[in-house]
Image (cartoon, rainbow over all chains, first blue to last red; front, side, top):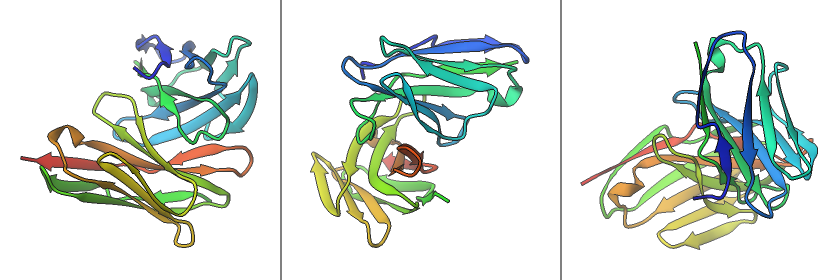
Length: 113
Length: 111
């Protein structure tokens, strides 16, 4: 158990809908990262927050947004969902913003039908 | 731009040693990490190299040469449970720290 909690574990939704994925980092970790992993693909970095502030942005679509709350949990919002958004979404956390060692949650498997 | 190259598949026998190479191209290199991921599971951190040289953690070692933009993960005394995907990841400090992952190397360990 990495100490990073993601909910829900599975999500099935229709195209055009909006969903929210939630992540609670390890106790003491200030940085949260979101990654997308499509079938047989590597991990694509989406966005990083550190202590409530956005720190880095990767290949995140405009339909996607995220935030980190004062209690350090984070949410990833995916809207106007398309079939191609079906993927595993991982959250990771690290104690600092350099991510020299990141701890991953078990992921949320999103299926868009 | 940023890119990482690692072999797509490697096969080895139980008890052997295997090396997974990773070459990278990035504008603001900060460090090289390695992660293991079993099917259906989450990536698990294995090692990090911020400076040149070898880092050893049990059966796993990782090496970095910044001048060659090259690193490798060495797995010794292979066990069946080591069958998994292994990702190298470069930490890029340009425009905020972000991690770029390679496509992964699928390791098959045979009896």
